[in-house]
Image (cartoon, rainbow, N blue to C red; front, side, top):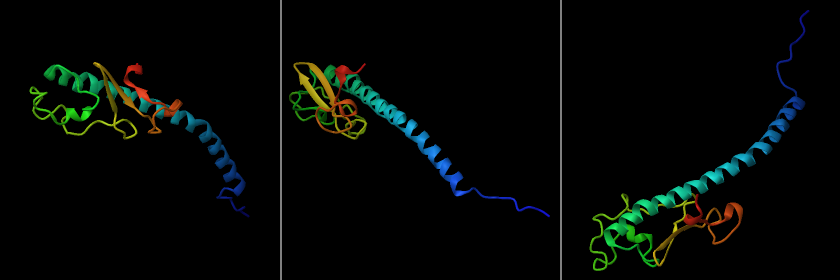
Length: 143
């Protein structure tokens, strides 16, 4: 006589596996999420330095000054004052006429304080201020 071989898992065995996977996920996911936020902040710093070192510097070389805070980064797309900026590059300073955005899809804030340029990202919360993951990211504080 042959015994019937069991070919399925019992409910208890499945529950044990699900609990073990849940515990592993609970330990691993927060670490992965923190690394993702850290990577986004590093990308924001890289983008801000790229805007400053390539686009804004090219603008200054052509026109002798950086855009004012009021003119902002939009001046990299279109010359709004041909008398003030007669050496403005044909076609602007951006290839696709779109301003770069931060890792959360927000526009960068541009501040020109008497020639000291600051670019700011409001971070994940999209609000001024904040702490930890929601803190603002300033170009001057990027490493």
